Length: 126
Image 1 (cartoon, rainbow, N blue to C red):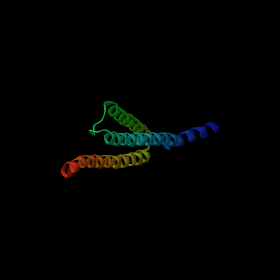
Image 2 (cartoon, rainbow, N blue to C red):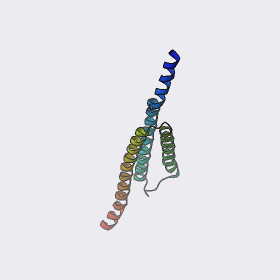
Image 3 (cartoon, rainbow, N blue to C red):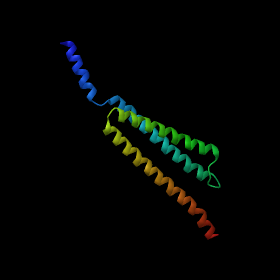
Image 4 (cartoon, rainbow, N blue to C red):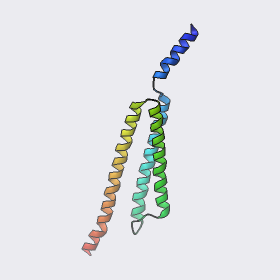
């Protein structure tokens, strides 16, 4: 009878989502999110510090490597959640990631637009 109880427990456990896996994927999503926002901040700061508003090759490589690492982590975490059939975690983490990165892109574009408008206003005034 003890073997039957263990087999039933194993069968019941396989239907529930892997909570530790979901937690690990949530950590991967959040680390990727922070890396993406850090890359956006680096881009904004580099453009503000550069007289021509252009990126140096080193800053460009740093920016691209952070985004690539974040993309790899997000895709692999999403695959793990999908293989685990944890669609709730997959959906909520994906939506949160897209929303926060979308806000970061909006801020990045607004800053670029403001930076482009500043020299034009200085030209018109001078």
